[in-house]
Length: 488
View 1 (spheres, rainbow, N blue to C red):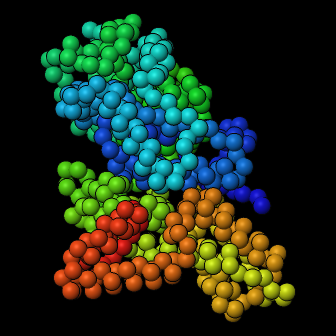
View 2: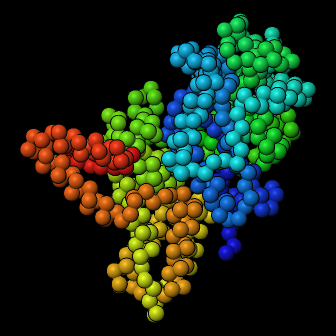
View 3: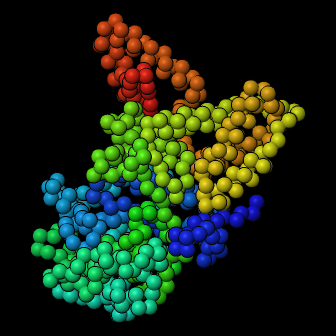
């Protein structure tokens, strides 16, 4: 089947036909986490979205080199060039070596993404493992006239860059507005221009993470790491650069400037950005107090949640929204996604039990396949694909109930279609542990027995039931609507 994959390019603000630089090969770089704390859901949404993109490109037969970095140095508080280093600050608070912080949260990050069933990237480089590449790139930018050194620190000269380049090409922001919204130069500020940003920062005596360089003992700025690592593993120009939309205005804008100043070419042909998360319509943020971590979402151990949801239910929930759309978390939406996920998995299980008929009045598998590919070819439109899969669920139920007959060849093709799109492309796993109907019935029986024990004030038995279920990975959550259960 011929594919005409199109994707939305933030750089041009329109959908474009995907035409990789090297036929049959794709280079993709996605900005990874800053591992000084637990990975948040916004990051997870981005990585699940790019896992979908990675999976679909592989499914289409491309040889993909997917690079996703780990930021373990140089990212300061407030995402600017001043303040404490996030790792040093956390290390002091917890009285640990900074690399203990890095190791702890990198392991946690990998554990969470494993729960979401994401495929590991081809390469996962760290900032601290590529200091020499960053120093080399900074020196080249200086040599090309786009950076300057002051008292051991090196800054990118944005005003010099603007003379020959469009600094705001990615976001189309007004340059005058940028200048007006940037703080005035203070007497102690080393920068020549208000938009200039650090490539290398001289370390203060108390700064723990530091490396020797031609300019000082210090550490790299946040933006240079991605430019250096993408160049090392994907070349001066590659196909796709991705990340959350919050990175476009500063981090990705500065990446483009650095790479242009060093390599004389824009780093990526296509820029792709995932949208933000909201909770009950309000933007999710730590300051608003409405954010919860992935593990809290899985366990339900948060005041905003009525119960926990399995990682696969949450992955399904994320994929029900297009990656460029806002994703709104609410208990009602999560409950609906959980039911939809279980309905889909039950249908897949039923399809495995279907017996073929000698005669067949089943048709339309090729049309279903064609529409499903059309959805994914249209900027990886997973919500439309899921709608097509629920049409497949309706057909499966009709076949299982004996209302529709299906031949052996059509059954093989149907099973192949469901496996490819549900498991290979959407990346879902069937974690129901068998027939959903059977499991629900058994759990309802156990819940009824526990409720009877509570009614008889036999709290030893009711507590024992809860504890034994928890031990085998099933959590009970008592609510005004009764007792709910989920896998943990």
